[in-house]
Image (cartoon, rainbow, N blue to C red; front, side, top):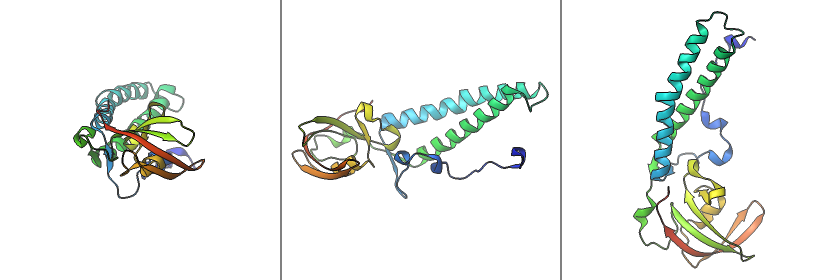
Length: 185
């Protein structure tokens, strides 16, 4: 069937996400103030700058006549679909966002969302992780999602506790050395 007659699915954009970005059903989108600001800024940039610019290009390309072989028109329409999909995704994520400021935890030694945790494993390897929202996770910077197996095992534990959890490489045992709550940029 010709693509011109096939309506693009307006289904749930969550289905297109990789598993690490999907939120558990019925949960809020916990996020730090900095993460919320980044998502809001990205949404604003898409809506106010990028989308109008691409619409302008598509309108210009459409005015040139034959659209079937017009690269600017075809690429522009594809880019508009991508932008609209991202706008829908960001809008949904921001609608269910629950901002949690780690600084409000104060001098707590128990691990909750936003905690910066230093651990040591059975090989005496020391690592520091910050528990952040799904949209903020960046393992290379030591930021893990609150729904990751490690974060779930750490939640509600305290400084000095030992925990066991199932990792992708098997059961691991860790000792919690330090718990801090700092501002996350």
